[in-house]
Image (cartoon, rainbow, N blue to C red; front, side, top):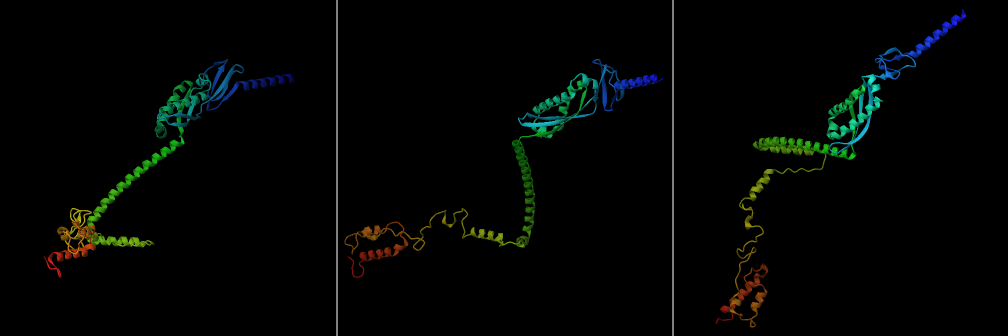
Length: 346
């Protein structure tokens, strides 16, 4: 009786051991692929409890969840010859567990290499502006390039995103200067537009003030009050513009410059004409009678002409300092020729 019980217990233990070796559990997000003697056996096993033959069958579990695969930064030259470094991320999942195990050795590594190659290709075909501002289009192109060969591997690419675009420091400074210049240009246009509008308003205000001259004076007083309100040492002296205009009109009148801009002198830099004896100029007195008629009496050596020449006589204008000498010589000559006092004439 005791031997029978032992045999039963042994059989039950062996059955439990065989059941533990044959039973497998597949999780909800997994699929099981069974290879019997190295060949694909049956269909893909779903989640739950599945049984295989121990020593004959081999069960491979494939994760069906979406995999996030970062792409290492790739350095390349864009179509407009700018060196950049671009990194991205790929979201994919397995849709056919059997193909993912049979048609490719390691589908994760294959997708990673394909993503890096496609990313370098996209960099070479795109401009820098597209990489910076038109990323959605590039993401779609990159997704299409990766998804095309991955379909045969039982892998579907859900999404590809470009994460970052690294530029050289010199390019960053150039772009910053370009943006600054563009903003300055727009600011100048806005300022010019504001100046145009302000000038129109000022012209309207000037026309209104011209109808009432007192309005301009009131505006001047308001300006003086505004300047004096601040704590400073500025001294404001209002000078009416009408006074300047009055002086300008007075200067252009009879006593002012002529219409041709030369004034009363007839031309710029022209000396005043000789209008007669006086401080302003002297009339030419002509040659000396003593010089014309020979040596005068009382000058036996006859050196009066030389003396007169040395003193500047002749057709030139005498200086004011020689006026008395000329008058004396003229009087002496007249007395000698007409027989002056004490000298009867011939």
